[in-house]
Structure formats: C-alpha cells, structure tokens
Amino acid sequence: MTLHPSKRLFPALLLLLFAALTACGPRATPALSEVEGSATSEPAASTTTPTQTPLPNPGGGVLLLSMTESGTAHLFAFSPSTLALTRLTADPWDDIAPALSPDGSRLAYASRRNGYWDLYILTLQTGEIFRLTDTPEYESAPSWSPDGQWLVYESYADGNLELTIRSATDPAQAPIRLTNPAADHSPAWFPKPPGRLVVFVSNRSGQDDVWLADLDRAGDDRYTNLSSTPAARESHPAWSPDGNQIAWAATDANGLTGIYVYDTRTPTDPARWAGAGGWPVWQDGSHLLAVAASPNQSLLTGFAFPSGGLSLALTPLPGSVRGLAWIPGGLPDPLPAAFQQAAAQTPAPLYTLAGPARTGVPSGRAALVTLDGVQAPVPQLHDAAADSFQALRQRVASAVGWDALASLSNAWVPLTTPLDPGLGEDWLYTGRAFSLNPLLANAGWIAAVREDDGGQTYWRLYLRTLAQDGSQGEPLRTAPWDFNARYAGDPGLYDQGGGTMEPIPSGYWFDLTALAADYGWQRLPALANWRAYYAGARFTEFAFTQGLDWRTAMLELYPPEALVTPTIVVPPTRTPTPTIWGYRTPVPSRTPTPRPTSTP
Image (tube, rainbow, N blue to C red; front, side):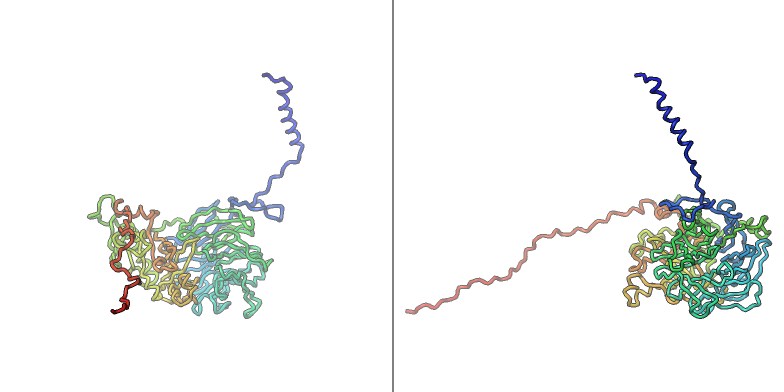
C-alpha cells in the first residue's frame, strides 16, 4: 500500500514543530561540579553507590606521609594526580609523625637520628634540620600553635604518655606539662588565633575518647569529653582548616573503623559519619584523606564531606603509615638537594635467597631448610621462607635487645603430626609459618593488641624491649588483651575470652607485626571459637604466604595424593534388637495348699 505524499510529510512536520518549541524554552544550566563549588547552601543528596570525584589539589597540594620501608619509617610525598610516591628521607633511622607549620614553611616531626625519640624541625625550602629536644624519653606527635611559636606533643612520663607544650624557637625554655595522670596522646592544636584549645585522645574515662583542653581554664574544668562513646575507641583527631570541625577515627565493637566529623558550632550534636578509614587529614574544609587499613595492607583513600562522595579510590601503600600531613602549597621546585638524594636512592633488599642444596628432594618439590640456633619441635622452614625468617630474626634481636625468635612453639609441622583441633589446614604444615612460644606472654615479654576487622579477629604483637631507657621501642597507646582474665571468675570476661589490661602496661615495646610485614610475614586471623578455645587465638603465628593459598603451598612439599582426605568410615555397630533375657521375674500366682479334710 502506498501512502499519500501529505501523509508521509506529517511525521516530519511534527518533528520540526517539537524542535522549534524546544528551542524557544529556557536553556538548562549545567550543574557545577563538586570541585567548582555549589551556589546553594544545601548539599546534593548522595546516591547509594559512591562515585569518585576529582581529588581537589588547590595550589598543587601534596600529601606528606611517614611510611615504613624495609623496616624503617621514612618521609614520602604523594599526590594522586601530579606526584608519584617520592621518598624525602632515606636515613637508617625512623622519621615519623610529620606536622606542617601554619605558614607552610617548616615541618615538625619525631626522629631517632640520635638513637632516641626527639623532635626536629625541617625547613622545606632548604632541607635544613633543627633539633628541638634532646632527652632520652619518648617524644612524638607534634602539633603547631596558630602563631607557629609553640608545639604541643606527646611525651613519656610517669609510666604513660602525657601532653607537653614547648617553645618551637627556643629549646632552652622549660617545657610545660599539660596533662596528668591518665594516658594522653595524639594532640592537635586549634588552627586559628588565639589558639587556646587542644584536642587529644585520653583513656581517663576508661576508654579512648577525644577530649578538649581549654588552656584558659585550670583543674578538671579544663577538660571536656567530646566523643563519649563507651562502645568505640577513638584515635587521631584533626581540626579542619577553619577550626569549625574536628575529624577523628573510631573503631566500634565489631572492628569497623570509620571517620567521624564533630561540628564545634553545634556541640550537642553527635559526630557524623564521613567515610570508612582511619587517621584523617583535611585537605580543605570539605575534603578528607584517610588510611584504610586491612589486616595486612595499608591503603589510602579520600572522600568529600558531608556529601560522602569518594574523591580518591583505594590506593595500596607499600608500607605501614606512621603519620600524615597535608601541604596546601606543595613542595618547593626544585626540591632541596637532600630530598633529591633521598628520592634517587634504591633501598637494599632485606634479605637474599641463599639457594640451599636440594639433595634428596624430588624434582618439582621444595626443600626444607634447618634453622641454625632455633629451638622448635622441628626447626625447619620452606627454602623460600627460611632466609626471610633468619633476616627477620636478626633484625628483631637488634631492635629489642634479645633473640625473640630463637625459641619457637612451632616451625614446620610434618603432615603426620596432628595439631590442636580446628588447625587441620594450618600454615604450619606448609613450612611457611612459625609461632612464638605463648609462655612469653605469661612472662610479660609479649603483648597482643586485639584488632577486629569485620567478622574476624587479628592480633598486633608487641615485644618488650630489653633496654627501657628510650633507646628501643615505643610506649603502648592501646591496652593489650589479657587472655588470663577469662579465669578471673567473671562470667562476662569468660564469655568474651578475656579482657583488656588495665592499666596499659608501662615501658617500651616493639611492634613485631609491622616489621614482620615488611619481611613478608603476615598475621593470621583467630578461629571463630577463640573466645572459648585458647589455641584458636593464634596470636603468635605468622605466615610467609607470597600470595599462595594453603593447598598450593602444600603441593610444593607434598604430592597431591598425600592431601587426599580419606572418607571417614563409621565403625559398624549392632542393630538394636530385642534382647532375650535368661531370667524372668516371678509373677505371683495361686499356689494350691493342703485343705483340711474330715477324718473317718
């Protein structure tokens, strides 16, 4: 059928009419992006799926972070859009907790360059370093006053951490102690004049909370609890650049760590959730960077507040983070000579593979290496893990002053040796794991800090250093777990597998978990029943997985048929049947008896 020409033109005329009406209407205004800003005061409603927005980089801002590399904490600079991870220090000592001065020209940080933890000030333009403190006691986590004349920092005194104020220009001036006697640390000075407020973390309420110190007051009236969350543990408070908001990290009872923002203009309102992560640092008044730590990996992330948009996708970091600072103006160009030399260095490997003789080992199988000087039921490890273990052992002995890895509960466990129930597929069978002697915990030489990650429980292991003069280790900030508390007669402590130690053990301790991670040794999660089963905690065990799963690692030592688990055969039992007894209980019955009869 053929349409009339007028009928064929009718749809085209309708399209032309619609286009003309559309052109006459008002034009839509393109919406401003989050980086450009918004003309309205109300934030746009967030979507259920966070979307990544461009990372704000005002004036070429750069993130300065302290991160472990080859077992030593160095300073690095990083910008996701303009600067790859660049090393700024490469000395054989730790540099941690950087803090930028208000004018952006100086950096205060803690360093062990003289063998003890002291405070130093680095001039960014020239690379010159000025030593501020010279004491054997631990001093770290500095924060600047708004005028750049003073520093507040944490120092070890009277068996725990306290806050101290000191002149940033005159080391001869006596320091001023701000807190006593609870454990107080992680201070942050109010960024605007007159700067009479300091936020910090304290356990004076029985749990780590964020507190505010008013320097214009005295006595107990000086301190105010800002978080007041008995079921959560707060850490790392940070002021926004305008001083109106405070961000901090909080870990709840389920092990979930997030960033919360407290608005000082509405002090009665609780802190608001900003995003998942810990250790926040402000880029500006509406964007935050944070560290999202998994059990064996640190990641960098960023998000907008209060919209909740993701501004930086999870970025893996090669080491453990020991401090963060945002430099809005960026680094000098060109970099000082000291920075350039550090950036050009290549770290030496922590260990080298010796390549042991493979005598008597079938082709395609890995060898087991005997560990010299190590006491264990079977002092052997997989040849890929033995060199790393021995290097870690030497490093730990140098750091803590005693050979902590010389006596092990287990190294390699033969497949024919049964472990405790629930450990049938433990990494000890692979020759890629070791466990320390748990008796060291009872003797006070090991402290295990509980760290939950979602539904799993991990442990951060600390070793008590032999020298307690400040030359080894650091003070503890978090109370370790007391496994023996389950036997104290308290039903609640028994059900939860123990409790935290009160007070926090004094002295200096070394983070074995962090150093072991640099050597490739990962901690393992506790079994689900660890609260009722001590062996299931696995708090002293480390595994050298190299990205392998358990079965693949086992196949490096054993043939596949050795891993075939036979089907369990239930022993035969008799089928229940009625039993015929040889004895029958007598039943009463009529018994004939003689009856009297007449006698003739």
